[in-house]
Amino acid sequence: EQTRTPYDFIGEDKLTELIHAFYTRVGNHPELKPIFPDDLTETARKQKQFLTQYLGGPQLYTEEHGHPMMRARHLPHEITPKRAKAWLSCMDAAMDETGLEGEFRDALYYRLSLTAKHMVNTPDREG
Ligand code: HEM
Image 1 (cartoon, rainbow, N blue to C red):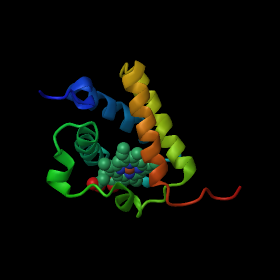
Image 2: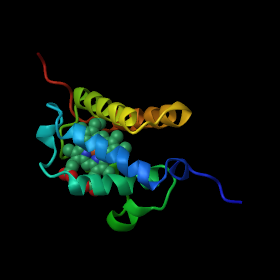
Image 3: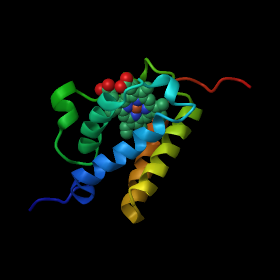
Image 4: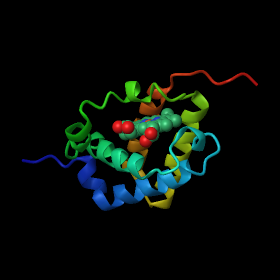
C-alpha cells in the first residue's frame, strides 16, 4: 500500500503557485533582495525540485544537484536571524495568497521555520 505524502496532498500545481508567490515577495523584500540574483527563475526552479523531495515527492533536487546539504549551500550567503524572519514572512504571505490552510499549512510552516533557523550563519548587525 502506498503512503500519501505531503507532496501528494499539495500537488505540483499548488506547489508551483506557492513558490512563484514566494519568490515574487523575496524579490521585493528590502532584507532579501540584495542577497538574491535579480532573475529568480533558476532559484525558483531549484527550490521547486528541493521542496518536491522535502515533501516526500520524487528526489528531483538530488537527481540533478546531488545531496542537498542546504546549510552548506547557504554558507556563501549572509543568513542573519533577521533574514530568516524575512524569509518566513514571505513564505507565510505566499501561503495566504495560494490558499494553503489548516493542519497541512501549519505543519509545513513549522517545519520550514526549523529549516530556516538551521540556515542562520551570521549574527544580526548591531544597531
Ligand atoms: C538558495 C537565501 C532559507 C532552500 C538560496 C540563495 C540564497 C538563499 C541567497 C541563493 C540563490 C541563488 O543564487 O540562486 C536564503 C535565506 C534563508 C533561506 C536568507 C532564510 C533562512 C531556505 C530554506 C530552504 C531554502 C528554509 C528550504 C526549505 C534553498 C534552495 C536553494 C536556495 C533549494 C537553491 C540551492 C542551489 O543553488 O542548488 N537561499 N535561504 N532556503 N535556498 Fe535558501
